[in-house]
Image 1 (spheres, one colour):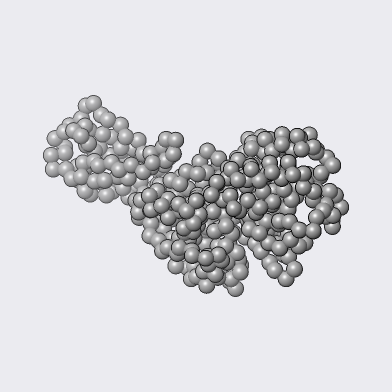
Image 2: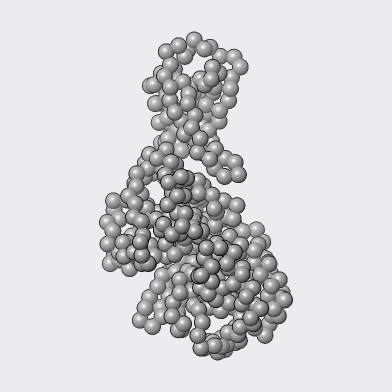
Length: 385
């Protein structure tokens, strides 16, 4: 493997100007030279280089350059490729699971407009399954020949990833599965935890993470309820959070703002959550999770780590907080600062990764380092609190 520092610069020409190309630390630098010999390019050929240019969001840009010889350009490209993919495999073959109704119905458009050109530029190949019904991704993962792929990619919300993970972990060979999973954001909390709120909705950034990302082991929560078993990577909720999530499914077209509306409605309604078998407290909120972000607006578990073997738990007792205080706490949850905040019914909602399950007792245990995700640097995005 070639070290980055060993890569020589490459002289090219564009628009009559001589340019020096250098590659270091995954950054391509383009510098115009004032003094150079144009005669070198008398018999030059043209080459195209596709680059993700940083800005408010990454943008795929094509550059056309003239090079002195094809051999010289090919040699330079090989050195750059070795350095750029030093921690990952180039030319990945991917299995894509696209949920067309995700992202307000825009998942397919997002893939074709923003994701596909980057995959093609990176010489990635892929097979696509477009889901048409609930649980289709789960069923697909139970029987898919995984050895044909380098990664499984979900183009959808957290529900799509939930189905994929549950399908993989329900396989007979589940303990032997090591294939990494990746996500393209069309409205999901997992991607925000991987990239932070500033880049969590940047489709190009997420696509780049899939192409060049670092495998990261994460804990999975095994949830048993009666004779049923679910696998959770995100949250388990009961109380006002479950109500504002599952009780606002009819507002899904509004995006993440529905969570805020549902929470405020729950606070104003003053709904009670009593008669908990273990805690024996009058609960306002019971929320358990494994990722820092649960949506773009809320960092409920700012100290969550991907593979510490622990669940992060938030409990609010009704007799310990007023409605006004709860609203103030909700504001703090947008930055994760609520952890420093100094405050029973017969039916309702229980949510596992945002999916509704029966309103019955359930048990949760952590299964350490069970699933592999493609990440930026092997960890969730850091939360400053």
